[in-house]
Image 1 (cartoon, rainbow, N blue to C red):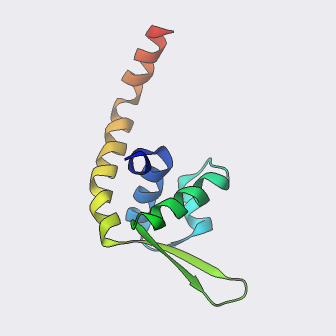
Image 2: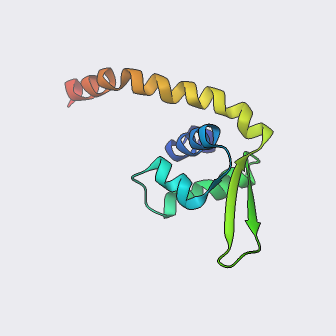
Length: 101
């Protein structure tokens, strides 16, 4: 559950759903504002959990691509809905946080 609900998981799954097969740099660019460590860690976890496949092509320099698996696609719809809900209600969430501070 921790892997599925993580901020970076939601961003990676949503980016791959929208962009299809992507290289690491394209994926990082699409997510934006992240260090190299977080997407790398997230991609490894998602691969080990069966949500995406990592394909390394034997070229120089090596070309690596990421694609959602059928399991990843089944997760993409609820993840996208969660992201959209958050974007819709972000002002309310921030207002609630300010009222508690």
